[in-house]
Amino acid sequence: MLLSCNSWKQNYCFYTFCRFQATSQIRMMESKANEEMNNGSEWHVPILAMTADVIHATYDECLKRGMDGYVSKPFEEENLYQEVAKFFKTKTISDS
Image 1 (cartoon, rainbow, N blue to C red):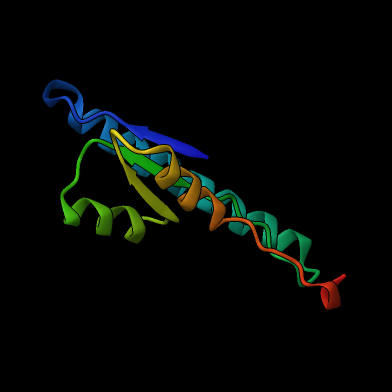
Image 2 (image 1 turned 180 degrees about the vertical axis):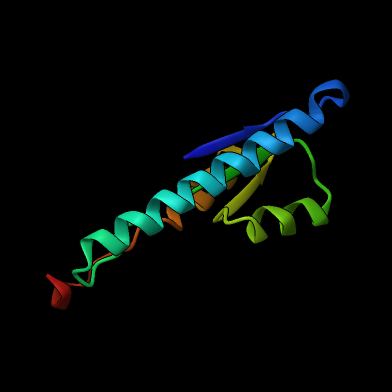
């Protein structure tokens, strides 16, 4: 899931709340689903923040609130690809 975060001054507080609130809700749903499955597997929705805010404290806050990654806008295609690729595990031949 990509959460695009608008940092315009008049909307900053609203969008900051929304992105963190959305992440919190998703993590709560994951936790509930994992408890109900109780079969050893774990469900996880990758969340990648996309924001024009390049302050390191914002990056830290996104990770602290449960996001898995962060891309600052504007971004290069390769940067986005590298961040999204982290969410995919590759299987070796012995794993299949």
